[in-house]
Image (cartoon, rainbow, N blue to C red):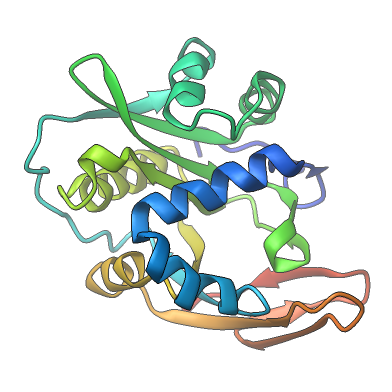
Length: 237
């Protein structure tokens, strides 16, 4: 199958931004998306009792979404697009991280409206530590983990996210991938709604009591959790 590489099941990489600057940028993005009041009453309390739903997409059953209400061209991103990816999420990524992701086979998609970068989405592969799930996800050679979908604040609620995700799924299916997983925070209603409209079932749930010194993690659903802290999902085939 084109685009697939041997050995992804055991390869491990640090694929996520680290450091205070990236965390503050991510929080700032959520505030701009939700507003300060909603952030204060919904997201801040949630940060101490986190819940994520894991959704699964059979890539042989992709549901199309119409083009957005604004012009937007979505295509796979390469090394030459790193400046645009960094511009879209200023302060979140480092060049070194994005270069490493692309070299290790992770897939990026970038949307532009005119010359302006307005949308990005990552499809991660292999074995990788996911900080917010407190463990190492092990993917099969025909599986991807979708994450860090982002729409520029001026273009949100235009349909870019739903249509862009449809195009990204179609592209990775053409490369031979068969299943996609993603996690959605319980407060994040729009992505959850789009997952359901996409025909994606919720297959697992992650709960974390995130109090310093009293962290407690609980998984449920279609997930295998191993003694070494790694985990793998299994969707309905």
